[in-house]
Length: 99
Length: 481
Image (cartoon, rainbow over all chains, first blue to last red; front, side, top):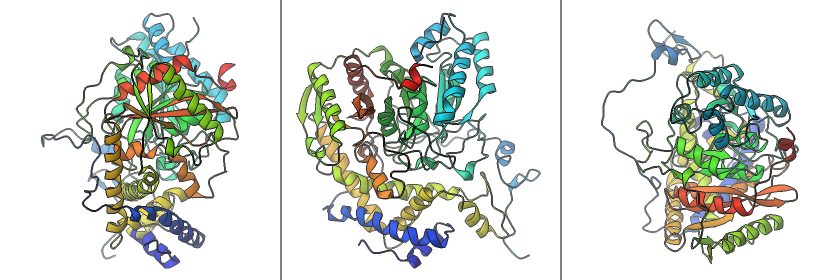
C-alpha cells in the first residue's frame, strides 16, 4: 500500500466526490494525500486476524416502533432551498432530460 | 446586585429575584460587544432574540429551571431555528434551520438564554478554528495564539468571561483540546449520552455534543440539562442521567488513576509534562491511587481516526449539493450545480472528503477502512482491559500549549497530531474531560481524564477534587471587564 497518488488519481477521486479542484489544488492534494495516506499506512502493520471491525461504539442503536411522527413543515423546508416550487412542493434543479 | 460570574450563582440569583434575567443577558451582551472584536468567538450574536427571551423569563419564570436566566453560547454546527447555522462554511452562509437541535430544546426547557453562535473550524474539521470560512478565533490568553478547535469559539467565549457556559461538539478532541488551550473545563460525554438530533453530522460513529464551563459545578449543570435519551437520535442511549451537580463531593479517596507513562516521553512539551505531573500528584495527595498502565495501540489512534472520520465525513457531506439548502452556484446542468456549489468548501474540508472518498472507493475499502475499523476494535478492547484495573486514565489533553495562528496550517499532518491524546476516547466511545491544571509559558495546560462508558460521574468527581486544589485562573482580558 502507501501508493503515491498521481494528479490523475486525485482527479478521479475528486470526480467521485463531485469536487471541482483548481490545478494548484490538484497538485497540492496529490502531495498532501500521499503523505497522509503514508502515515495512515501504519495500520497495515497490525495483526487483525479474527478481529471483527468495530461497527458501533459503546451504546449501540436503540430500537423504536415504526410509527408515523410529525415531520418538518414543508413550507419551512422549501423556504431554505436555493430554488423551489412552492405550489407543487418540490425542489427545483436544472432540466435533466431533453431540452 | 451585580451579575455573578458562575451559572449556578446566576440561576440562584435570578430565581431569588436578586437580579433579573434581562440584566444578566444585557451584561453578557455588553461583554461580548467589548471583548469579541478582539477575539472573534462569535459568528452571530442574537441581541434582540436573547433580550426578548430573558424578558419573557422574567415575566413568567418557569419552575424547575436549572439554568434559569443563564446565558449560553452554542457552536455554529448545532441547529437553531431562530438563528443562522453555518458550520463556519460558505456553503451554509445564509442557512437558518427549520428546526432546533434536541440540545437547544433542552436548554430552553432548562430556562437558559442562548445569546449566539460560536466560531469553529468549517464543519468542525480542524484543531485550531483557523479553518473557519469567516476567519480565526483568537485565544483570550494571547491574541496571536489559536484557541484550539474545532470548538474554539465556544472555549474562547467561556475563557474570556463573555458567557459562563457554552456547547461544543467533539469528534476527535474538538471540545477537550480547545478547553485545554483556553484554560476552561470541557467534557466529551459517552457516545450516545447526548442526542445529536440537529447536530450537523461530521463523523457519525464519533460525534458527540458536550459542555464547556469555568467551574466543575457549572459543567455538571449544563451536562445534566442536555443529557438523556431522545428517540430522534437512534444512537442515543437509555441510561439514567444522575444529578451530578449535587454530588460533587470532590472525594477521590481510593480512586484508581492509570497513567500511561510510555505515551508521555515523546512530543510532550516539558512545561506541559510538569503541569501534568503536578496535577497527578495533587490527585494522589487527595487520596487517589496512581498506577502505570499500558496502551500499546495508542500510537495508532490518529491514523485510525483520520481514516474512519474522513470516510464518514465524505459520506455525510455528500448532502451539500446546492439543491435542498445552503447556497447554489449558477449552472446549466445538475452535475454543474453539484460541482460549482461544492467548490465553496474550504481546502481542509475538500482534503478530508478526498481522503474519505479514496479509502471508501473500490479496491481500497478493505485495506484502509475495514482495517482501520479492526484496529479501532483493538483500541476499544485495550481500554476495556485497562478499565478492569483502574477507574480513569490520565494524560495531558494536548501535547503542547496554544500554538501561534498560522503555525500549523501549511502542514495538515502536523495539525492532526494535535489530537494525539484525544481521539482514542471517540474511537472507543468513552467519556473524557479536560481540566485546567496549571500553566506553561504563561498559557493554560489541560489534564484529560477518560472513564468507562456512562461514568461521567467519576470524571466530574475527580475534576472537583482538582479544582479545589488547583484553582482555575482567568486571563487578564476577562478579569478587568
